[in-house]
Image 1 (cartoon, one colour):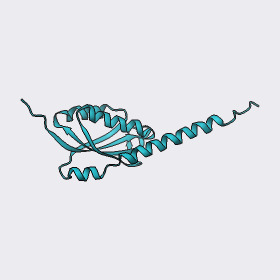
Image 2 (cartoon, helix red, strand yellow; image 1 turned 90 degrees about the vertical axis):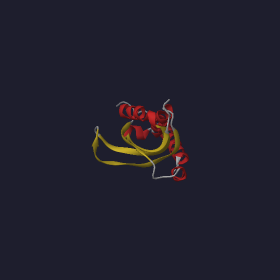
Image 3 (cartoon, one colour; image 1 turned 135 degrees about the horizontal axis):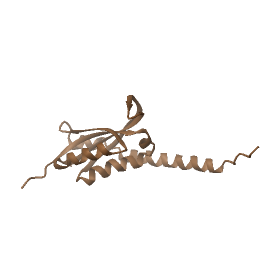
Image 4 (spheres, one colour; image 1 turned 60 degrees about the vertical axis):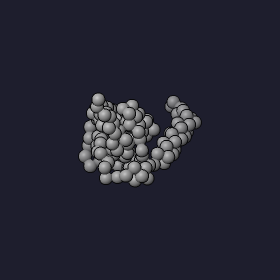
Length: 141
């Protein structure tokens, strides 16, 4: 019988600019991909949103999401396949995180800050839509 081993991994995902605009859906996509394959997320944080050094699939900007997770080794190929087929993730790197302890990984957890940013972006979007709806329609000349 084959033993199902798990290890700690560090996953850096580069998201499309359009996905970065809807950060909540992008974070949910990463979370769902990892948990669907038996993973447990230890920490997740938004690293940065910046201009890329070179265009990737005609994208000039992207957002980086850093995730630490415990994953079954048997599911790594399936996770990589899902990230490769994803419309949200431009690039990713999945590395074994033997150099960090679980406490160090959990110390980088910024899921609450990420949730706050997602809520703030949603609120700003609602305000923009309300302001646009409140504008009077231009009169035909």
